Picture 1 (cartoon, rainbow, N blue to C red):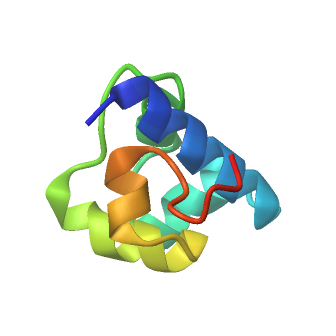
Picture 2 (cartoon, rainbow, N blue to C red):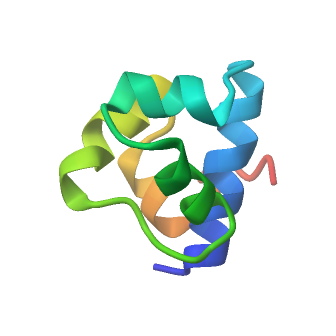
Length: 74
């Protein structure tokens, strides 16, 4: 996993859903600082958050972990 690529795709899909970092954090029961760190590539989501995160963002876990869309949109 590349933290920068994963952070970029989280940011992209969060914005597609018109969610703030705070709103995404509330849905995942985490802090907005954690979301900020992901999006800046400073850390990665905990494994326990991957499924809910992928569901909220409508993004496959594979694409989330890879940091790229498998359908070639990026």
